Amino acid sequence: MVDQAARYRTIDCLTMIEQRLPALTGASRRVAEAIVRDPWAILGMTIYDVAAISGVSLPSVTRFCRAVGYAGFRELVQGIAQSLGRIESKDLETLGPPTSGNGLEGLASTIVKRQIDALQTTLKTLDYAAIERAVEAIANARHVTTLGHGGAYVPALGMAIKLNWAGIPCTAATIDLFSNQVIATNDQDVVIGISHQGRTRELIEMLALAKSFGATTIAITTVPQSPLAAEATISLAVLTPEVARAGTFLIAFDTIMVLADILSAAVVDRRWQGSPPNRREVIEWIETHLRVGPVPQSETRSRQRQTRRGNRQVQEGAPAHG
Image (cartoon, rainbow, N blue to C red; front, side, top):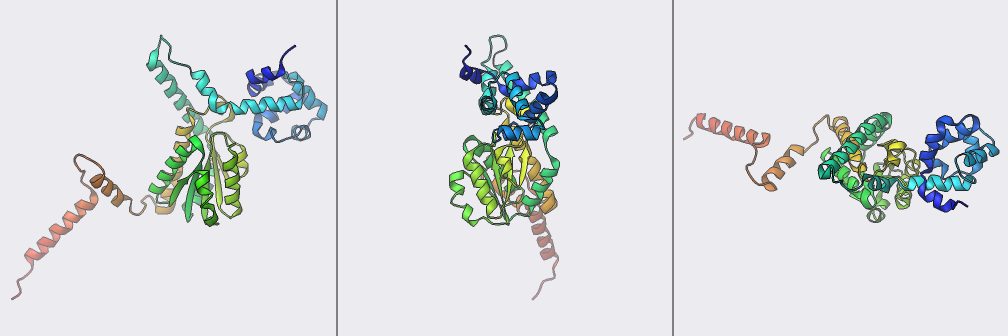
């Protein structure tokens, strides 16, 4: 007798459904298409809901479950949940150590190729209408907060830095820290929640709280239609479900940072026509106070020397008074 629990731990349910989809017909195909289209949503549905969105009968859903190897609907949902739960770790499992044949160079080549492929997917995946709404909200915000939990705090911090250089007051915060700041949030603020899978409970609840206070909330995840996206005013995804299911641990950061660059550059144009206030002066201060080695000539110092030179010429050419 087959151990069903062991089977769920070893088989990627969603991959299996996608592989069998071309051979399915009629009601079973419609159920499969509904699952593949939005697997996250299926986790919160009953068999009645799935039948309704697929346009099929309850027995048809049950027959589909058995057709893909599961005893019933509950077991199917468990398989889908386990597939989605593998998103973070799967790429580490499949990458493997460098082999004797290619060594570190081969490993580096594999990682770089995955990053490039992921960025190309991002370019095709981005919802530019949603990005436009996000840019408008950020450009007009009193203050922006970027939230991230665990490893997602790193891109949250990176995005906050980029938005500050775009001339937007922005701070990065953990969920615990923002729980002491959210009380001051209102409809002039933007709160951006960043999560690889979009399933972090504390982040979902905090974004919902900020939204209830009137803030515009933006969800940034690797996959569309995540639980976090459902709570946000604007949802942005950087990968497709198919790519994300192959693993996001190694590729999420760069794809999210590309989105941060797009948002920051667009906000600079929208709010400051390409030139945020004080940027030039801050760059000069950093170069003269924080860097070592020769100090590059800045436009500010060049203008100051020209002004002093002009003042001396005026003074030298002025008539003497006596």
